Image (cartoon, rainbow, N blue to C red):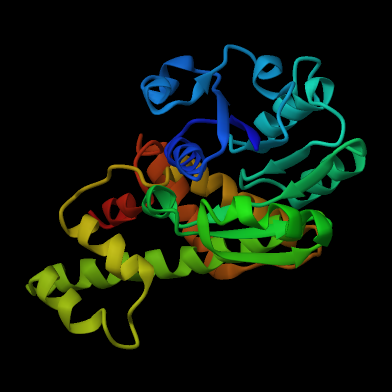
Length: 283
């Protein structure tokens, strides 16, 4: 297929490369064109405008920063809906607002619009092992499943438009608790004089085990804050979940506490670090 890809960030670059490796023709656009450097060597076409990228594409993927970026990319005069060919499949993989996903589906009636946020970070993006949570029409999901399989291993249909985004909110809520708990465990170990790596070996294969314990706790111990997922983007995700629940007059106390911790880190200049930098809160 002819695939257009918009958003070449920490995860988007690897995802576009995996689509190319799967045999698709891939064109990319990124607001900061320098982030596309080197992709042409891999046979990917780099475009200078959204219009150039999407106008003859069969499938268009987006993974950008914030809901406001999604709106701009889709709804501006130079955006996707104004320039994509009728009948194309358009998939937003940004972690964004469920309400916005529904809005795009309602506006984009000339297209097949899906919301499909992902989980797995930079590691999952590179290895093609992402979890992909999809909302939209079931027949559109079925049609694109072979394309999703180039990027992920756990590909789940959740329901109508917005359902993928709501599922991703559940994912981020679960991460909030586990990454904070991993950080507190590592801080406790160091505070009482234990070797953090030895503690990890002791507890990570039992009931305390988690992806965060396996992947981010070692980085915490080594003060390795290279972003697999930015703190600033995690704050955005947690706020989306918080706001959704507040609209129902409910609150999630663990989420709210972890959001407070991350906002504290952002206020202290760490918003561009990886989420594992939460350990800095305790220092």
